[in-house]
Length: 152
Image (cartoon, rainbow, N blue to C red; front, side):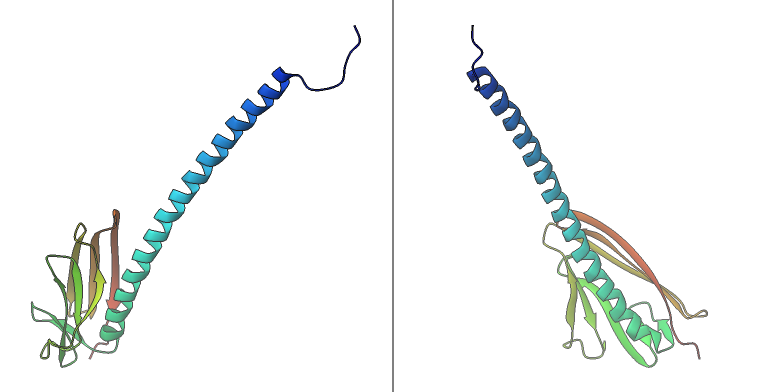
């Protein structure tokens, strides 16, 4: 018998099966990467928002003597507030507690999320320890910062 050049049907089927398996593997890896990217992007957004909250408070606390009357923080002679509202979903900032109509939501979680804000003032040292914990879009977070105020 004379050997003929060409591809048999069996060789062609083997190549198609191997190619299909490789495509399924590449697709699975791509999906895993896409989900990981989405999770990292959600976490980045949340932590950037929390960093903004901490910077806002830090700018307010940094230039003043800080103290607490048990209901809010007092920077110098001006009382301001950071409070959780809307059933634990919105973190509100009041620049001046004597005029609560001026406020701004500085961090929010959806209705399925949760939010806890706590602060501890050491008036003698002039330090404020702030902690923000909760869950937003199925991403848990727990961030703390320590801010030193001006001492008089």
